[in-house]
Image (tube, rainbow, N blue to C red; front, side):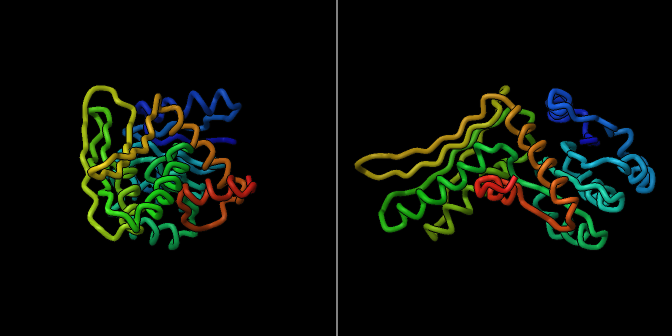
Length: 236
């Protein structure tokens, strides 16, 4: 694939490295300087790529989504902290017949973890166990709780119909840890996902880019969970 990478931070650089290792061509790296240009310029920079992967900043997401849609380039949106703007993002994609894959977390392991937690919540629904969530990330992560934590909270709440207490830590260089617990007077059960490096997130973004390209950029908005569903079902 010929890829455009939006964002030149730690994740953008990691995606570039993994993409090159996999034999993909990096056609353009769009930096904050490029992103500050007008819409027409940004559309021109994105044009001609098989897909674009965005790991930039939350306040640039809508502009990047619109530019990719106008350029006819499927976009994998890996930036966090923009969830409140999802409705506007969907409107832009529909207006310009774009193709977008987004997710709270692009780790394949985390997306399977969602399913494990959802099933666990169903099993605990008829008990008096008290659920809780704990998450920890590096000190540079801006959003707290993380998007992954919010998705886990939603999965728990859907089955348990109660408030889920959440504790967030931002310190050091922690790639990301999410812990789901069910507590009672007699015992405690915990489910934990621990990211060792950020490579899992970058690899998932590349997986999403291959998936959406395989759909020939079919217009629409897809969550990364739909990519995982397709893979689990054997549709690669």
